[in-house]
Image 1 (cartoon, rainbow, N blue to C red):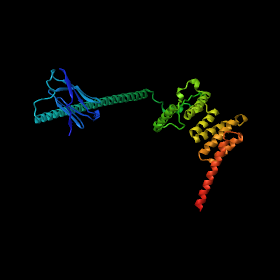
Image 2 (image 1 turned 90 degrees about the vertical axis):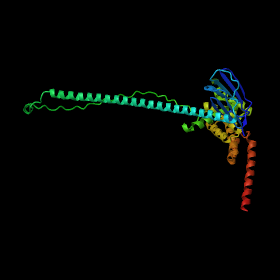
Image 3 (image 1 turned 180 degrees about the vertical axis):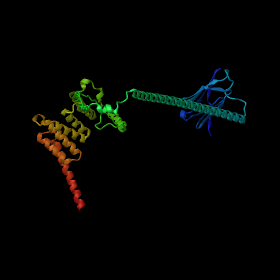
Length: 392
């Protein structure tokens, strides 16, 4: 059973009428509105509001506004006068229902008539547009036909002139005169030499490629995913505290980026250090110190596979080997050994650590090597026990 709203407010002037209906917490998008010149209705479950106005209003000049708490009707009176009451009075329930049905039917009839008028107007505009297109097409065909006839007349005129010219020429000499005339040997045709074209002038073409972040070719079907990935990467760099777009021109050098990464590492902001060093590698791909520093950041962040790659790149850049870069090569081998061990390649990792300690016997990986050896022996012992138990 719907709840009829009685706590609405209304006010008027000689020309305007305003009605405010509370929504009682119902969202505005759940409210259905029906308006007629003398009838207003709101339906929003479980509430219901309707009013049969004392006099008709001008629907075209009236408005209905939904707010978060009220529905406000701003109505324009057809006759300028103050009303004694808002609703029609002294009607029985049956008379009131009959009047309401009549007003609703009249409004439906008016809306149907408007729709028919719009449909008729649209059809008329379409017919006029089609007629205009037909006329344009007819004019175009006529123009083409006139051009064709003009070209045909011109061609026929040239043929007629050629015929008249042939008729005016003197008649050919008789056969006897041709026989008595001395024979002239035919001239030999000299072949025309085709001129050799000049060599083309050389020029330099400058080709500019659109900058691209990814190594693969650009595809329109993957554009949305690539943009989403780049936006996530940019957000991650902002979260880490390093955004390369914010750097000044004088800050875009490897030494500054190394110092910035060292500051991030001291604060245990490994992602920020990785971002700074990656941008430096993008600027200077052959600057080996950037790879060495980034391998440490990857190890701290747990990116062991990337740490192994950076150590390998650094070792390639440290060639030819010399005593000057011995310490750095030992660090690369040791960090690569740690990364391989953590990735599950225990023997290969220990082999790299041993190679590091051969370069620097008292290096920082001495204790770690012994720890890894003990762990590897324990793992091999457990595997042997499992194999033996399965065999039994």
